[in-house]
Length: 287
Image: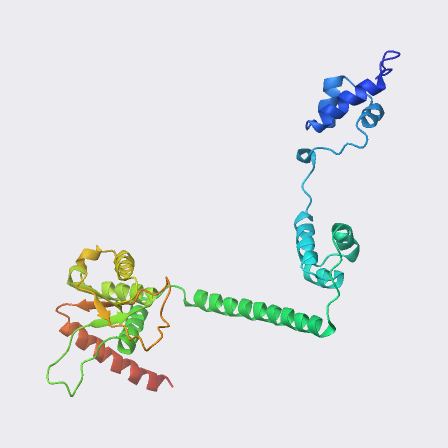
């Protein structure tokens, strides 16, 4: 495209206007349209030395690496350490952090200690990843349970954690009484009872918790978990505080235990106990 003679004679005046627009956040295209400058060489000369506005820059895939490299450099990491951590070239790292102060030289013993610490942290991360993968693989391997598998698992759980009738007891205690602090165990136990046809109105709930804990919060938590109103719970059993002992079960995650009683469950208890001994015999034959 040609321009009329003398169109850009007032170069300094145009440059002043172009710089003002540039600093106001205009892109080159916007400056071109505003000043009617359609010669790219002239346009670039008018804004020479003025950085483009941030919004015109395309995202850089390495921006996050650059920021991380700067963080590590400020923490005193060497180029070699940053290269191993981020997998970038030293030339890139040098370009990214050259304006930062050089870290102070550490004592060789301290450097060795830090290197050992980082290796151990890496080893712990690798081990944790392996643990998570093993757990996930085992979880996926279970798949859906059949009704029989659910029944057997529930019997084993109850015999391990539930109340049992004692031969030496003067009074028969053939009823289902179960107490546990693990929410997932409680969920499974309720699902097991449901599979056995136990109606919800036959269940009674009671919280057992230390008196110095958040009793109201624990009651609300368990009530929501089992899907009933906290007012329907039996009176909470409080464990007395012994000032000479240091409690370890503290913090927001401590909610005591939930006890679940099943009324009119003598026949169900007998079936469960008989099934347990059947499982024991079945295990012997399987081996």
